Image (cartoon, rainbow, N blue to C red):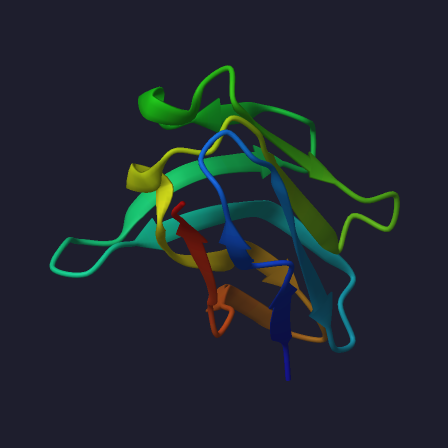
Length: 120
């Protein structure tokens, strides 16, 4: 069974920084894509950033230049460094993994979410 566990959310002032972490556990051989999504109250969940095993990265337009996604050496972890945070970045942030190879194949898996609040 594959599980994703996020950490690093919290309350930060506008202009501040946070670093989110997500670790995948289970008997995992490889994960194709790992990424971060967010969902604000009353809004749909949206992609923030994702990174493939080969290092291809995409960012949502509003976070370009402020957020940086990276994968750990073990490739089963993903990080989101968030700088110059704005109130509109406030949301629950979810980690997602796609194309997970275990003894079988898991198409996708979501973490439980971590709250990020940007407020003075």
